[in-house]
Each structure stands twice: as C-alpha cells, then as structure tokens.
Length: 89
Image (cartoon, rainbow, N blue to C red; front, side, top):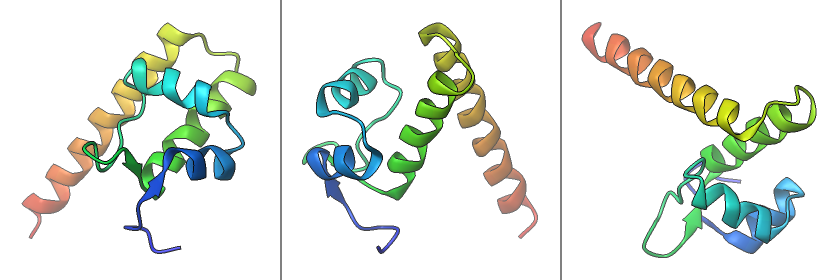
C-alpha cells in the first residue's frame, strides 16, 4: 500500500485487528488523529501508532496515563529528529 494512501476507520480496524469502538476511544484520548481529519481518513503512520499502542498495552501492561506520556515523548523525539535533519541541509 502507498504510505500516503488514506484509509477509512473500518479499514484501519480490520488491518490493525482493533475494533472500531477501541479506535474511537484512541481518538478521544487523542492518541491517534486522522491524517485527514475532515474526512476521518487514516494513513500508514496512524496504523503504526495503533500498533505501538497495542504493544504498550498488551505486551508491557502500560496504563492509559503511561501511554499518553510515552506517545508524547515519541512525538517530541520525532520532532527533534526532523529538526536535526532539516538543520543539516
């Protein structure tokens, strides 16, 4: 699949083996935000984030507060990485 391709919520649920209800909860917690908010469409990055959340919950037993903190730190790390890369150009 094209990494920039957009998927509706039901397709993301199928591909991630997570129910639509759980994904709606992830959105409510602001753990995932649709790549295309207006049309509620998701991309591969969203799918990867969902898989990370699943791993944190299922394999590591991280609670909701912990997941929020970890996702915030991952986002911060990604922003810093992008800033470093763009400053090297």
